[in-house]
Length: 230
Image 1 (cartoon, rainbow, N blue to C red):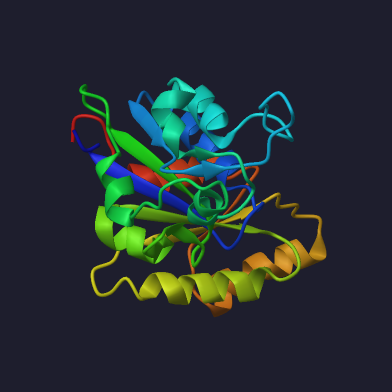
Image 2 (tube, rainbow, N blue to C red):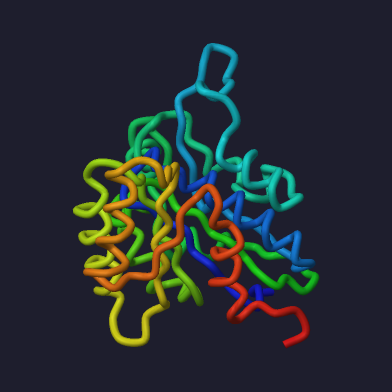
């Protein structure tokens, strides 16, 4: 059963804080009394000799803790690849079967109960392969989310990364979902961070939220179509 509102979280690249932002969004929505669910179509990471992810919790574990779901519900076990590469590349490197965007979309099983907001977090950047036959843009075309949250680091290189990612997301076509830019690890006392935010908002006229501190505004972006009982 598709959630009333479907939000897709993507990034300008890897290690920009997509999972952290998605988790904060889930928590903020739950605080508003909304029923949420999180999904990670595929995840990849390096492991140690015991099979434990290097660096701590997996994305599915972090998202599941925020949404109140088991990690295996957030990301199917057969879509967790123990190699730190784009998921389809990791599958290939591990000698596992290739998979398609359509297969990932078909595997998005949502709760039987009513879900106000479903949050999908993808891997890597907007043009990172999500499957053997497509990237984030192809996934968006297939799943048709109501909102897209684009996460970027607040520091050096942000303007280029956000602009290129927004241009790529625009290729989804007319009627594509609205995009909100989230600058993660933002510090208003940091001159470059502040200038990046102002440039994106004032010159590029993009809606921008900063994290930490902007979790409520992020939830408001989603809640435009996610008010319980509406």
